Image (cartoon, rainbow over the protein chains, first blue to last red):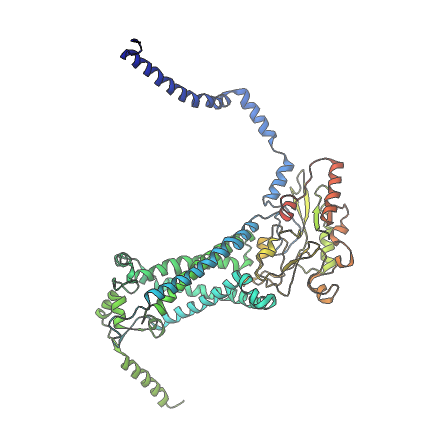
Length: 367
Length: 196
């Protein structure tokens, strides 16, 4: 009794138990791994492994495995669509993506965007010009810029409608128009899409080149985003010619999504360069995803530019905006404009100029 | 009703291209469009094997699934056919098909392809059987005459088998049992499912 309670003995027992447990844990991990060491170092095992590896593959099964995995052979037939691939596996993956997540989530994305914008409009209403119109206007977009904008915008909308028809038509339009009606429309839609696409690309590239200088991000944008762009509430964060939101639309929309859709679109539109169907199937998926995101983004851009903001659209239609609108939304740009000597012109003056011009041409003798 | 299938016995195929020629001649298939082709693996090397490939008339056909105008249909015999009046030539079936069966008369800029053309299992198309319209669009309709596809009928070594899937499988099984070796029902898994 007295010996077990002896503090020295108890300590020794503790130490023995502790080291035993440690030894058990370490050895239980180390001993099984000795097998690897043995297998690696033992010469007899090594040779045997090499021997079996040599015999492991059967040329016949290799050939058929290669064929199943999309390997190619030789074929004497010639033609633009003749492939020497035994089984192409990309197609099935493409089909699963396209008929599954792409159509499902893509559809919900667009519906979600429209609902979100409608809710936003219902909740916040139209953003009015603070203090009403001043009646004085300044130039915002020049003629060639407006032409570029509307050329690209109209072709964007046509491409979006025709493209979405090809993606969703089978589910949405065939039940309405029937197979023959839809096929006739789809034939036109596809050709319009294929021929208009390259023209649209030129517009997008011109926009990127011409408007990049307005869209370089700076510190004003950080403050603009901190204040949420003044989209909700009465705040009006400072902004230059383009505010933070417009810059996001430029870089994420026009630049990133635009270039992605253009490059993949060209891959699909010009099959005569010999790209494989695998490349084209991947390009089609990327094209559709980028385009769907872009269309969703476009809904927001179109809403803010028309219904959402009073006085914004006229900057792109007639090229001039009200000075109060400019002070409210793009104060830094307006100050710079005035500092550079731009003279605001009143609405009456504009009307008079227009009439004067009309009268002038009418009064001209015809040659 | 039968479930029509193709099977090419690679142990018998001698790469004579008779199936290809028969198909082109029977259906007056235009230049550059190949409903059937022979692919040779390990060409010129020991163990060379060839397989005659055309539309396999899949059970769950990927072409039919991706077609934006829904122009494909499967007959009661399990033959996958399409309606050229609906086809817009978008090329999607060509991307989706594991066998590269869909063909088009053109391949030009702006994605102009013309109407898709593929093996019909010699069963024509949606037009009235043996009509001029069916002949010009889809070729002859041998199935309506109670005949099987000409490619398989022409095959000198009977490597290419066409017909009801059960009978085709039975013939092939007997061959494999007699000659030994492993069965190679190339393409059947991709076309008719995992358990085919």
